[in-house]
Structures are given as C-alpha cells and as structure tokens.
Length: 148
Image (cartoon, rainbow, N blue to C red):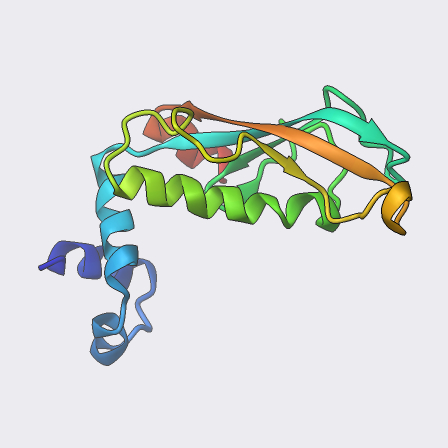
C-alpha cells in the first residue's frame, strides 16, 4: 500500500534509503496521494485587527502561503516570526481536514482566525495582530509556479 507515493517521495530525495522510505508515516503517504489527486490550495492570512504591532502589520496586510512556503511577492505583511508561527497550526489543520475527505477546507473549521504570539499591551506584551484565514483552491501549475 502506498508504494507509488513512497516512490514519488524517493524521486524527490534520491539519497533516501529503502529503510528510510519504509519509515514514512502513513499520514505523509496519504497527504502525498491527495496532492496527486489535485489538493492544491493556497492559504491566505489577512490581518483584520492590529494594535501596537512593532513591525507595522495593519488591517488588510496579508500572508499568502503555498504549502509551507510564504510567497513573498503576494504577501504584503512583513515577515514576522510571531505572526507566522501560529499559522503552522492552521496549515496542519487544513491537511487533516483534507485527508479526512472534507471537500471545502473553509467549511466547518474550529478556528477561522489566528493571532500573533505577542501578548498585547494588556497582558505584558506590546502588539497584538489577528488574521482571518481562508483557503483558495488553485491549479497545480499555479501552485508549483508560486513555490519556485
């Protein structure tokens, strides 16, 4: 089972041994199969609220993410680790939903927003930024080109 996916991953990492290939987690193999079926989406995190952000992220600024890659050309928000780090959770939630067969990753989400890791002025930090998260289905060719 998943031999084709193992071979695909091995083609991307020729130095991977057969022993290492056999260690690939089932979730990674299912994820690889889903991509081959056309699971190509970009995640857009648009700032909807900002207060005292030291990097100047403001409402309307956004991050556009293809897989685990922030596309610098389409993103308008400064690259802030405190803002980007929480988006990883949304990325993995998206993958889980798609692996479970959900047709639209924007439906039935537990969380539609993300907040930066700064605590905000009322909690011992300084700034606080909130982002609305959406997923947009795109063609494989666009997804691949934006990751180049």
